[in-house]
Image (cartoon, rainbow, N blue to C red; front, side, top):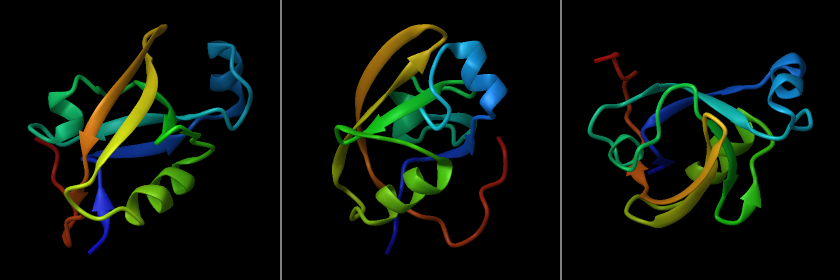
Length: 105
C-alpha cells in the first residue's frame, strides 16, 4: 500500500517561482484536490504552494509523491505551504493511494 494525501501536485516553473519570490525547486503547486480528503478538510486548495513535508523541503512533485508513498496509510504528517501569500502548517492523515485515477468532483 502506498500513501497519498488526496491532491495532485505539479512542479513550479522557474517563472512561477520567481513571481512568488522563491528559489526554483522551492515547492510545488496543488492542481487538483479530492473533496472530503484530509487535505481538503484541512484547508489545502488548488493553487496552494506546498513547501515542506514532515519538516523537510519539497523540491518537486516527484519528491512529494515519493515521500508520501513511503508513509503508511493512517500516518499523520505535517504539511507546510502558502495559501496566497499566507504561510500555513497542517497535520494530515495519509490515505491509501487509489488504484484507479480519481475523477474531478
